[in-house]
Length: 222
Image (tube, rainbow, N blue to C red; front, side, top):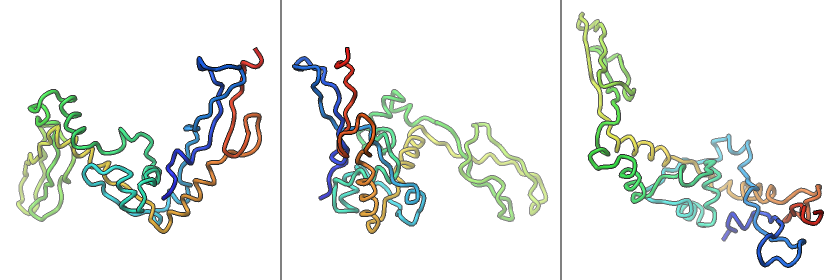
């Protein structure tokens, strides 16, 4: 089983300022969560390394990692593959959270199902030529007039589809469900790259080791 993401992070010593600190030279060691990594550009920008995946139901990154890679600890690979930084905003909500979000945003169930906007239906002339494509957002007063050669007359159409607040929000969530995953045969390459990036490089006054840097203790000079 692979190491979890945060166990891959190097450490950082910062000056301890707690009530139990006995000397001004004490440090507290934490994981350096600001040491953010990403999949290298030549891999991230090449679709041949990825496969499409559609998130089902309330699946989380660890569920998907376990299903695809056989290891839930590789949830961070799922996140990095899609450059997701904020799980709360960039990952589909659970059904419970989604229902609560709708009610909080729109106030009542009636408002949830009221009209958000209109979109066009596909409009074609008598010769099957497309006059208006499907899916364009239009006002409630939408209409289009065109000359139909086959009918030898002007035609006015007002075809449009009502999109409720609910449908609108579902569509936004569904967009988040289409993600990309690193193909299993390239997984080791990505993990090796990340493990190579994580250690600190020698140099600078803060460097202690590849796994540790230490913040400046200005209290020593006060």
